[in-house]
Amino acid sequence: MTHRDAIDPTFLPKLSTPPVEWRVEPGLTEYQDALAFMEAHVAAIRNHEAPELVWLVEHPPLYTAGTSAVDSDLLAPGRFPVFHAGRGGEYTYHGPGQRVAYVMLDLKRRREDVRAFVAALEAWIIRTLASFNIKGEQRDDRVGVWVRRPERPLLPTGEMAEDKIAAIGIRLRRWVSFHGIAINVEPDLEHFSGIVPCGISGYGVTSFVDLGIPAAMGDLDLALKRSFAEVFGATAASESSDPERSADQKRADGNKGEHVLEQLGHGLAP
Image (cartoon, rainbow, N blue to C red; front, side, top):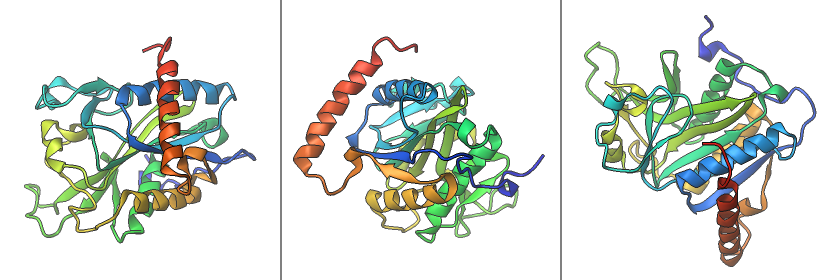
């Protein structure tokens, strides 16, 4: 089997297609609202009624359980709300200071290859981290992006210690993706102690701040957008992503967006 780091990391559209919409959500987004929005938008993409979308959000503190999650990996059941996400993978944490990018792409326009898609997501993250002089790496036996920690004691296996800086969990419906990636900028890393992150024990979790990189969320967003274009193709900012718009306009759009999310949540299958 081909190692993921040997797979062509570009996932550009095969045919002429509109740019992927790029949206940055202000404030904290409730997880159940995000799920409802993704369900509706993915259906609209499949029906050719909506553009592909990358949606950048932050969530309040919570744990999510993927389709492979086991109960014993939830170490603190009453600490934060737990949501069954329907994505692949095990338990993960989301919270303030972590950038979550929900990636809603039509893989029929690119490649109908799940392993290549995961490799492309990892390549996107690795290129983004390189903008901040962080060397992220893939591991064939562990999905996500990892950082070596030579200053830490060796692992019991004699290998160098490694920490996870970015997680990946996706779901495909009729070859349209949803869910996506999470990158730790400045979350409370202690919150990860309530789970076995992604079902992988023996390794730590890190962040930009933990590595001594004082990056703002906006800096990461710009780097993500640049690297995304290299791997997946052109993007077009949605109105809600325009940094030049006034605070009053953003608040008004936020209220409107909450109303839309509430409407989309009704009548959707769980």
